[in-house]
Image (tube, rainbow, N blue to C red):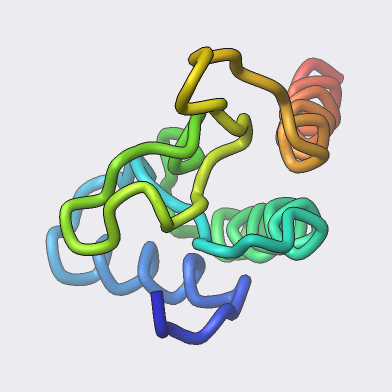
Length: 117
């Protein structure tokens, strides 16, 4: 979509939001648009590592949701923008997980296991 891909930007945005509003932050949409899903699969754990470091530094974060589950229609870019963890066949509507779906699941499992300890 023409923006820089920088995993650490999420931590900075969360820090700013908390400093400006003074309340804990819930990340409701975070992801990248790219046709190269290996880039997305690498981006997710890197961004969450940076976010975890920010929470360790004291910024309260309630949770993290990736944007988005499926490649979808974007008002400016139509169906061309690929943001999803699953691809969608526009003829059959069949959905198939991309490698980034596994990366997201792995991150969730790893951080859940660490929280349970």
